[in-house]
Amino acid sequence: MPAEAGQPTPLILVVGVSGSGKTTVAGLLADRLGWPHRDADEFHSPADRAKMAAGHPLTDADRAPWLAAIGAWMDQETAAHRPAVVTCSALKRSYRDRLLHGRPGVRLLYLHGTRELIRARLEARHGHFFPAALLDSQFADLQEPQPDEHPVVVEIDQPPRAVVAAALSLLGLADPAAPSGPSAPSKEAPVSEQTPRSAGPTGEQWELRRGGQRAVVVELGGALRHYEADGVPLLDGFSADEPVTSGRGQLLVPWPNRVGGGRYRFDGADLQLPLSEPERHNAIHGLLRWVPWRLLARSDEGVRVGSTLHPQPGYPFLLEVSAEYRLTDDGLEVLVSAVNAGTARAPYGVGQHPYLTVGTDLVDTALLTVPAGHRLTTDDEGLPTGEEPVEGTQYDFRTARPIGAMALDTAFTGLERDGAGRAVVRLAHPSGQRGTDLWLGEGTGYVQVYTGDTLGQPERRRRGVAVEAMSCPADAFRTGTGLTVLEPGAGHVLRWGLRPWVTVGGAAIR
Image: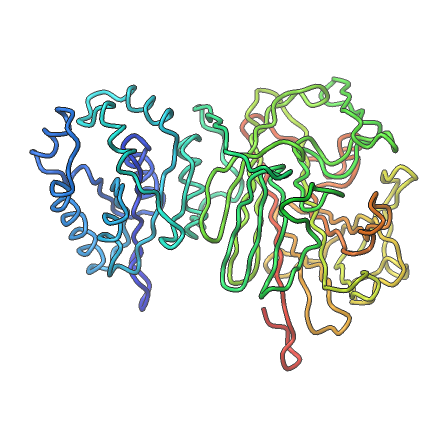
């Protein structure tokens, strides 16, 4: 695939200590992209190979001609306008600077793993000239890529194909010809490693930046804590030293909203979920909100986190779940994927629970647009009882109008979509001059809109509008409405995003 005219020829430089999987990952990347690739080991001289095989680490002087040879090959591919993939341990900053300097098309992919994991891999590797005994020298030399190098960092405690999928997505190189849904899980079981935790109530904080945009994702529940554009907050979120309340930014897996009484029947078995909403005798918002999610990959502009939902009372199924957040020129994009890693069929639903704000003290004066033809009626427990058209009712927000004093905790469906298959819910400032669009893409059949009138913290009521992308409505485990049934190895994808806008000269720009 030739480089586009006027653009630097893209090259991916895969770096990391020996045993981190560079050769495997680079080969898979090259196969997926259809690009040529070379492994740094091919550029070592026979003398260097013999030295390492004897257990002696290379010096900087030894590595200088090796780095020069790698750089020469990169220049050869660039001159021919051939995108390419190349591996190199590039342990020191000075090594990476030599390979990156004067080559604007090179992107840095760093494969990160613990010393213990990499040692185990090296000890299991036979017939390679690099012995496990040299690992300590590698870590002694290692200077991890810094933010000013703009690396994409992928954790290697996951199957190689998952590493490649994360890398491609965060590099912005996802293959458009590939299936949109998640692939079946590898037979290699992911190895969970403990991520160092911060002292805050929501654990690690992963910050994303692009231009004037900034977003923060947290370890607890993989939740979206904050999103702003040009210094203006677009979410009624929470600070790093606050706990999550009212579902703010949380991922709702394996069901959104409520399951009445927590009881449902699936494939001939009667199942009982914990009643996480005891005041209404319901199970609410899934099982992964209050568990730590592990970091899978990160870059300046994106992060991918994951969690394993193990079989448990009320949900005896095994799921591998990931959530990717990525800033683009158009805003924040979110992709939530799940794969049934077990041997039995599994019921599944998903949603996410951000609260939008346009900076007003209350949401009453904000202008709301919901492109939906129907809304779900509910009983006193918040469970659906039917569906009715919005036309001619107070729930018709197909044309922008102020929310006023209306209390909304309403699911909408019959979504009107644009040519890209997206339905767009808009919250605008009373002036109509700025606002945020929340778009609903693949996997979203419903949207819940909640003005927060019943929040347990009175001071937070009606400060923001929760706009929840959902694959199914409340009580889907009991009614089957919109429910996804995942066969073993099958997956599901939910895509949604946020797009800030302002009006200039009567036209909305982003």
